[in-house]
Image (cartoon, rainbow over all chains, first blue to last red; front, side):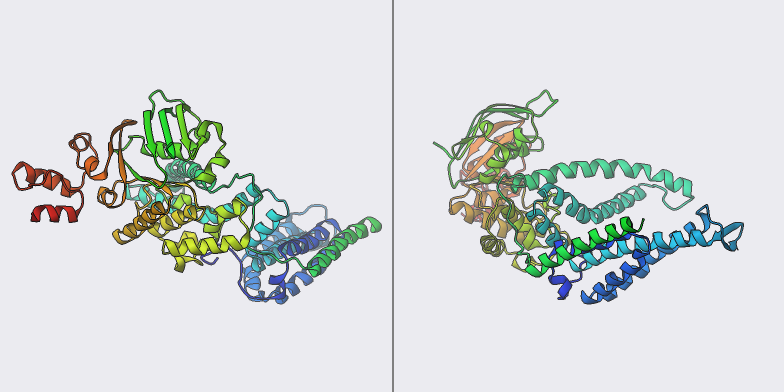
Length: 257
Length: 279
């Protein structure tokens, strides 16, 4: 992550210029069919997500994210599911004492492609949309300000919490806390970190609440936004098409069953 | 009618027995720059929270007496109305960063967005405020990547940009170097001259002597002394009660005992000390 603590890649592309809600709709137009429609649809949906990464000119960070984060996770899931999913009959091969069946592999494949479509389309959204733009757009469309604040401040504050935990560990170590010997001892040494971190954070929350309240956070006036977020007729049209696609995919499932 | 009117103000935090503020009577005029000094636990921060409306609206507890700012009564107002008139910045800059914004420019705009100022006006006001406090070059940085002193300036700017009638500052320069402190005090002084009323809690007495119009000395929740900076800050009462004293005052007091300081008035700042010892 960059120092700004977001995945956002600041380049200019057709995808970056789209309204945040349109991109969010795209994400759901990938996820909902992948999970709700016929399972065979999920692998096909990976293709538009992949293409969109090129349109958004974020293919490099996108592939990077795929290789480092998504691929290891889904490979692990695929192996576990293929080996342990019960109920298969056609045994393909043995892995140690376990049978790997064709049915289990098939089901594992569809599960991981669904996960893949979900995570990678969300990644695409985060790569091409600045978090504050996404939030101010959603707030202007009626998402409560408090809700948006919780999401975005969590993203920002987590790294701060990590830094604070490091400081506390350093302080406790300088007073002789053991953090380098056996696993059990190290696990035990986490206990004295918990209360300074938790209580310290609670005290900070109070101060932060005062600070944002002093800046009119709970004001009853209608909030405005520094960012002007364009919402073109192209955006609106695209959103309708995506919604229709979602409905069509669900209808397909019902029709086939 | 004074701009700020505190009458018989007494306040207890919830679940406590002893009042933190006791029978405070204080009048402050519009455009006045008042500094509050006192040892730890004197009630300085509580006084700030009271002026800013967080006592009793946020902290609850028991408040008697009356608090009036700009003609409005605290107990009859709600907090979200109150903060439109009164701006508050406090010591720890890190906790004053909203956490919802990715650049300093956006951070400063946060308050204006909340109170519904139109976009174009926000841009102009943020720009103006940043130039004023000398942080224009930080506009695109992440608020979390700044030093403590820079964050304090951002916190102060975030409040100034809202143009409150009363500015309440609780040690706003605690993490700044002397140059930064001088600049910030200069900005605050200027705001006061333009009509903003300022109440400032500060330990750096030499700065107070240079910039404030009046000093209020708090001790154990009560006003011990109040008056012109030089009279209050050089008073014997302050050194007897554990207040922070300027080293120039202490030096001159010793010198006075040995007949080396001829003037009646003791100095607070270096300049006054030099002046006094010369004559």
